[in-house]
Structures are given as C-alpha cells and as structure tokens.
Length: 327
View 1: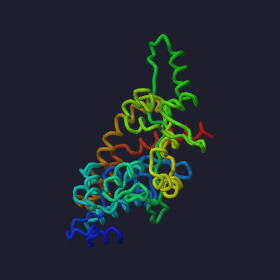
View 2: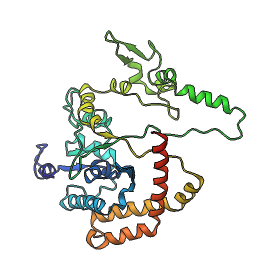
View 3: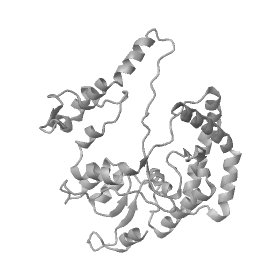
View 4: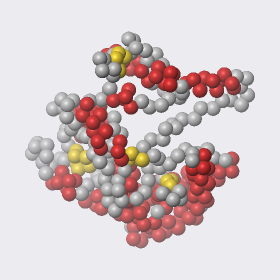
C-alpha cells in the first residue's frame, strides 16, 4: 500500500506531470495477485484445504469478505483504477512505453518479452518490469500454477480405428515425440553448444510461422510445456527472476476431474448462474455500489439459494475420487 501511494504522489518518471498510475492490473488477475494472502485460492474458485475439504472461495464468509474489503480500500484511494474491469494488456503496454505505471501483474513471459521491452532504456540485461515474491498477509502468499491437463482429446464412438487413435495419442505424449514437438530437429531448428545446452537457431525466433509449420509447438496437439525450451528464449535476468521469485512459491491448482453423468447435469443447472452472480457482485463490492457491511450477508444467502451447497457436494466427491486415485 505504501509503495502504491508513493507512486501516486510522486513524479517518478520526471516529466513534470502527475500522470503516474500506481497499479495497472487486469480484472482477471486480481485473484492471482491478492487472494492467496487471504487464505484462499480464488483463481481455481473451488479448492481443497490441507484436510482435503473442498471450499468455494467466493463463499468463504470471512476470508472472501476481507479480500473484497481490501480491494475496495485500494479502489477508494485510487490505487486500483476506476476502470479496472475494462483494462487490457494493450493499454498496460502503452503505459509502460510512457513510463506511467509502477505495478502490474501478468504471466511471467510478459516481463521481458512485452512490458520491459517497451522502455527505451531496456538493454536486456536488467529487468524493468520484473517479478517479485507473492504478497502475504495473515496467510503466506503463493502463486497458483497451471493445470498440466489443458485440453481433452476424444475418439468418436463410431470410429473404426479406435486402437490406431489411441496409439497415436500414446506416441504423441512419448519422450521422443515431445522432444521433436518442443525442439524440432538438430541442425534445422536448434543447435547444441559446447556445454551441451540447446539453443534455437535464428530462423525459429525470427519466423514463428515457418517454425510452427514444421509441427513444432503447433496448437491443438498433445503436449507438455518445456521449461528449458522456454528459458532459451528469455533474457538471463528473466530466467533467474523466475527461479528466485516465482518457482519456489507455485502451488498446484484445483485438479481437473471428470464428472459423472449426474454431476454434469447438476453442474449444468447451477454453476454458470453461480459464476455470473459471483462476478457481478465482486465488481459491485469492490466499487462500492454494494456495501459489504449491509449487503454481504444477503450475497451469501443468495448463493445458498442458488444451490452452492449442492455444487460443493459434487466437487467434494470429485476431489475424493482424485485423491484416492493419486495416493
């Protein structure tokens, strides 16, 4: 808070104008940045505690209320801007180019490849927009990682080649195929230096269309993300920043679990409406169009009337199946 206030009150870019914007953060990233400090995973929404009990973060009466109260305080002070719900990455990029913003939040990749690169004095050896350890409050902060399962592949029930399709998917996830998928072919797309470290050849970094035309990192294919293949594309300071301030704090998100037919039917009836209601009220509480002291109990009661209890039963059953299968 003190840092944000300092940015707001000081002509840090030295242009003689009070045009500094303390924090430029997209609405979707607010849960990533702040909810762990309040003891909940608002990124996954549903999350399991250390005892394996599943919670719905926007239904956490004390923690969620405290989170909303904090963001409302930022909003009231002008530390969270008035138009935070419509702010986009292009606008943040422009602010970096004008040296107007002090804090943002985004995926790691953007630190060097997008935001720092906007500054005329960026020389690729020292970060300008650089990652930091997560915020902590009453609870220790963390970053919610990505789920390793980012897509689902299926086979038509009427297919006459089910076995062949399964063989293809098995091969696509093999070490051999994943190495080809991530790096391509030595001498054509990458080379190995004297220390045994791989580096992409210039044509790969200069022409991604040609690169993907070979089938490398092509969309909609079974794949596993490769840290080494990403790191060679990043500035050295960026790679070290990830090691120091991000990787030690990453926790797994709520797992992807298949629904039974009955669970899917119940979720279809309730979850979309619950999510819409939560999103609308989050903005209302943060901006003050709804008062936390007067309206929060009614918000909780409405979630209960929308069958959040039934949804929690479903998610608990799913999580229990997951936990049992992964023991």
